[in-house]
Length: 135
Image (cartoon, rainbow, N blue to C red; front, top):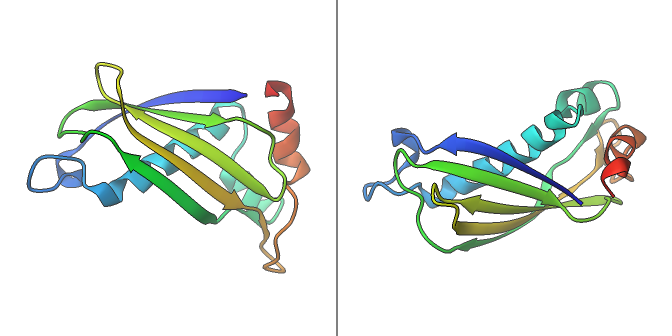
């Protein structure tokens, strides 16, 4: 299993009139978590796309809004991979408040797509090799 934490502060422009993080902005937190997790272990979305011609579009999101995140609050984006991917990779996200409580939970599934054919493919060896040591 691989778990990675990344801290991010809620900016004014990300909030609604109540001063809460706008619900539509949570998906950006999931992406930040995924990208920074991969970067932390030496993997890059850009390299996977440019060199290996594989992209990872989101195919499913399940989200649970528990408590609101507020303007200027520093959140922890906790991203977890519980298993090695096949054609689909599943990320589990917990958003934690400044005091460490889970305020949001989401599961995000992405599929591996060959950029030249547009067809689903297995997880590329580039990514699998980088992940194996965590499982």
